[in-house]
Amino acid sequence: MKNGKIPFNRIGIRLGTASEDFYLREISNGIQNFYPLKSRQEQYNSLLAGIIDATFLDVGVAEYMTNNIYCNLTLVGSDIDKSAFGIVTPKQWLYAHDLDVNILSLREAGALDELKRKWFQSRTCSLSSEISTTIEVEALGGLFLSFAVITTLSLLLFLWKNDP
Image (cartoon, rainbow, N blue to C red; front, side, top):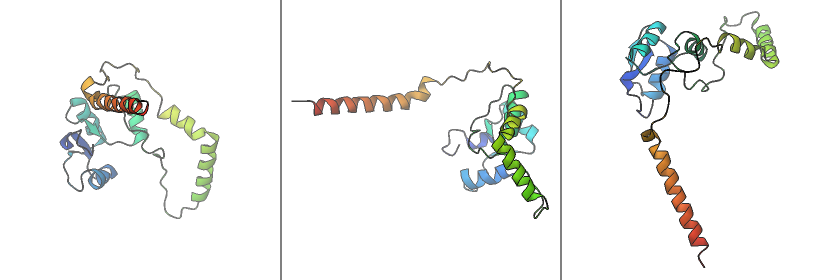
């Protein structure tokens, strides 16, 4: 996004959210050049209608929605932040320490991973897609060019070193 592969006006951001703050701070240098959205439903509708090409969502919600409801949408970049879930409590809550200890115990026992798989990574959508996800040759042109240059240089270096 930051390098301009997706036009900024094709990136949908929900107003008044942490996603908006992140976008303004890390991607656009404070310039509000995105497509403004008012609700999570508007995010999905805008993606499906082709109004926007990308949007920011919480990983857990996005996994569930793309796996079970919006089967023709896909999630990319889900491994950016593995600690995407949190529990909010009042400051200096009486049971905060107990909750921390119990959550840590559940994590160590693998119960949190199992709950995540059951509720967020379950899939009712088919894995096959009508939309092709193949990469065009033009998109890989730079990779092929780099490979050809490195191979040629390696071959020339080999011949030069082994020349009697």
